Amino acid sequence: MAIDTYAVERAVTRLTAAVEQGRPVAPVRDLLGERDIAVAYAVQHELTRRRLAAGAVVVGRKIGLTSPAVQRQLGVDQPDFGMLFADMDVSGEPEVPSQRLSQPKAEAEIAFVLGEDLADGNLDAARVRGAVEYAVAAIEIVDSRIADWDIRLTDTIADNASSGLYVLGEHRVTLEEFEPREVTMRMYAEDEQVSAGDGAACLGDPLNALAWLARTAREYGLPLRSGQVVLSGALGPMVPVPPGTRIRAEISSLGAVTAVFSARPQEPRRPEEDA
Image (cartoon, rainbow, N blue to C red; front, side):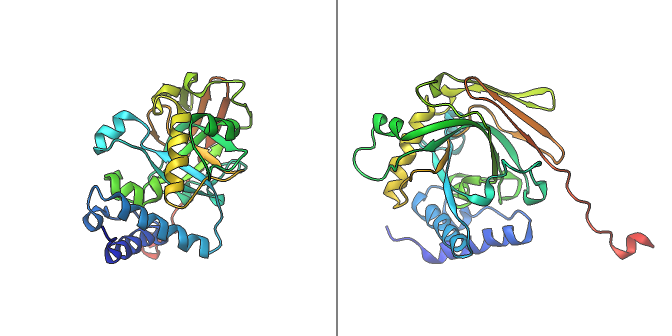
């Protein structure tokens, strides 16, 4: 089936306006339908093309919809993926810049860093496992350009899999030292536990998610490359993160990773407010 280029262009325009104006917009499924994966990825790829033309650099991928519960909610039986750009990595910043986010939520994940390309040949479990150089704990800050997170499958795919920012931990562990499916996770907001889960919550094994991504990305002409970062998908439920929140995720074998969200700067006072 041919891609509806007019629908793609209208969805791109709507999502671009959300970014430029810093304000969420209506869902794009009225333009794309709710189940047309191909047209939704066409929107994502056009938005990616425009970002690359403006100087952005792709450094990896994120995997979404790895939770069976979320898949059931959206009526799908497979994950989705989005692009990671260099400016999304805020690991080296003292605070996560809340002003860059609209309606953020945090998820604890495993970040795989690849030591080999996954572009050619049989991308089976052994090949994918062997391509991982190391893993670290990660906090993905998901965000939606769709108002009130009113999303279905095509909304989130078109919107770069509801991507935002991410923070990587510092403790590097190889797959010879741990099994991703066996990890346990606890996530805290301040000192209160707000999420818990394990590796099995991510498609039964985060390496299953990585293998799915390797094959799917290649099908779209976007194979995974050495040095890229892949965020596995959530190990437990995501939680909202208002400005000023401190999030800490602890993942067995991988250690802890912390994200402190900045307080939003105050809006400028309007003249009538000074009267």
